[in-house]
Length: 203
Image 1 (cartoon, rainbow, N blue to C red):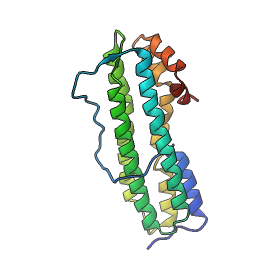
Image 2 (tube, rainbow, N blue to C red):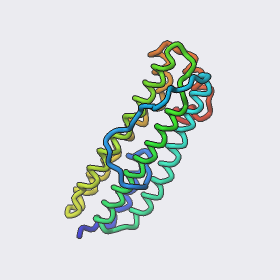
Image 3 (cartoon, one colour):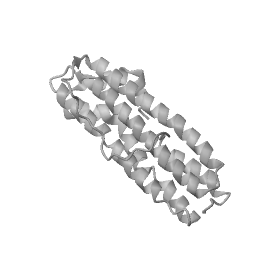
């Protein structure tokens, strides 16, 4: 049974917590895509209400993942058994997948902004957010394959598990700016800049 070298445990936990940009623990899920299809016609809402609802969902999602990430780091920091650490990684990503599903559902429920291209804006937003789940599913799959019999290789691979997810989260900082430009809707950008939750997503 593999064991993490004493000094590698805190390095592993701390590096992953940063690389994952806040993922959460929970059930072991493995479906490959996030549904972005609403079963009923989405309602039109004021632009500020739409941006506020979307950013509230995103802020809650990131907060929940950050809190779970801290718990995960603390747990792995004191666990020397690599098989147990691997299992915790798998569970960890399962929870992140669940949190992401909930976030996407909340964004779907936000409706469509009352803009000439409102339907396209909401669809594009859901496509952007749909990028997260496949990255987490992939990371969970790679976590299952971490080599518990090779501590050095295990640590290197574990440190990279959340890299793609971390990179994708940086796009949230400018998502409303990009959609505003793409669909010629400057009011979307203005509403996002005026919302406290949206500002939290910015650097």
